[in-house]
Amino acid sequence: MTSTPPGVFPPKPNAVAELFGTTKVVIGVVHLPALPGSPHYAGQPIDEISTFAVEEARGYLDGGCHGVIVENHWDIPFLKPGEHGYETAAAMAVVTARVRDAVDRAVGVSVLSNAAECSIASAWSGGAGFVRVNQWANAYIANEGFIEGQAARATRYRSRIGANPVKVFADVHVKHGAHAIVADRSLAEQTEDAEFFDADVLIATGSRTGDAAALDEVVGIKEHTRLPVVIGSGITAANIGELLPACDGVIVASSLKDNGRWWGRVDPAKVRELTAAARRAGAELP
Image (cartoon, rainbow, N blue to C red; front, side, top):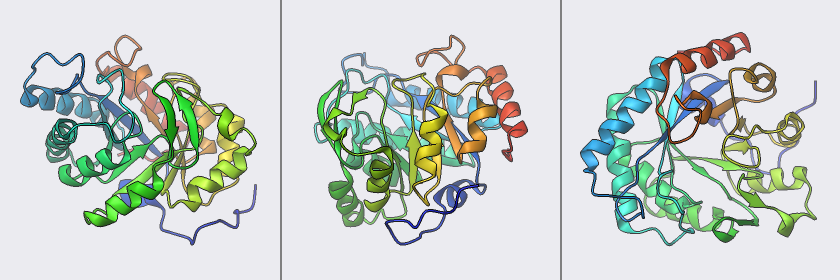
């Protein structure tokens, strides 16, 4: 067993335990239909989108997940941070509030790509407890181009609107990107960078949506932070038994869809299969 790392930020309460009431969690992702302002939006009323989101959230939660993240995945191709319109924040807040009112477990928000301030605004207005931010510190090259860390602006914005209770789940090596810009910084250093910039939970991922994180990367992040670490891509019923014991939770979507792809619908049978495997791996399920 490895010793607890000394840390680069004063100790803080375990955000996973605070949000979910347990220390090993399974979180489902609600991939929303296209929202107003995005290329694929065809006029669907927000009420219908909200109903869809509640149905998807219940599919995860009824199957044993601890919480959900509401994400604007159909707003592809994604904008860069700071380019999102008021309509995105408004729609995300309304849909998130509907989900939050319909369920009794933790709800988070992820506005793609890397829209930390928009995510925080949506989460705080919609009653969500956390956000996912793909690039919290440093910089990388993504599908959207050059993406810089959002920590400095996002934490000031969060403070300015009184949203400090909203926790930040931050990727260390985010998927869909090249990290050549910081190739001279080790995994340990990049892990410490995210902790130093006041993240609450760290995320390990594979190279793209649906790709599993390598076990050695998960362990490498875990060994260099006192923060909880969750895996953010590629989790299946087949691999959760190996990966969950090495971390504090998983974020999962594609493998639980009826077609195995992000644009499918949540399959309750697949959710139950995965959560049963998570229970065998040590998770206490609702």
